Length: 377
Image (cartoon, rainbow, N blue to C red; front, top):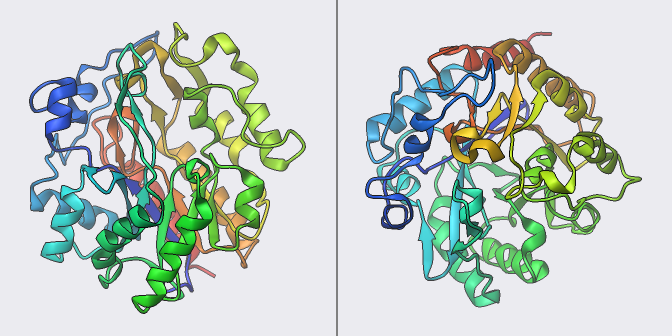
């Protein structure tokens, strides 16, 4: 992918097809659509359920669906998808079918990369009332990382895979959870070079330790704005109080007390969208920083009264949020020329660009308006 222009990359959830594990945990034929359709308003003026429009309740096993998604993305200025990938160990992987079929069929013709969603699945994060572990994330050292790389290599070698200076881009959701991070990055980089690349372009989200990421020369980018998501998991601060990101984090978390953490909270945690993103539109703290912006967020379909909701989200406010991120990147031309959008299709978290029944294509039209403006003098 050319680096001359700013690229918009959107996270992509492959959950929308049945798998045996979800059948066991939630019932035969379960996908995220089950949560989406049963959502109910929790307070006056609360808009639920949030339902898809023209793409419908799709099944990602259907090639035509993946083609329709890619066509919409290209038409409205989304340059590529970041597929969430659930590699738990060399013996266990989930929800890989859409990306594997995309690789095999060579379609759709849309750039892509992966985000390793390296997180243990617990019931309480997925709508259950208990904190039991559903499936454990494992770290198997050099041998396990080698197995993972070998699985990824055919994707890396695909012409559609997003690369920066001959380095495949690879996002890691919880990079701070990797107990032997240096072993992991060294293994991936060495194997990438052996395969003819110049290494791996690792992108870390900010739910890792900020200082250690900056000091690790192997990490080329750092996605921002994931601070608000950590409020689902507890109140532990991720950054020093004196740091820029620490100040942003503390400002957002003022409303959150110990009694409000997930599993205890009895009512949704509410933020106004425009006010919330105003706090998150920060000046770049370093030359590795990559903005991550979100059009909307309401995970009550999945979490009910324990949810986090950014109310009053609409395409106009979303366009302003995205434009600010682009303007900041223009003022920092040495930073990676990407803006990450969370997300393309996380419907159970009320977090999507795909057309919905209330706004139609307006979320996408906002993206196109900002993208078109980039190319103008």
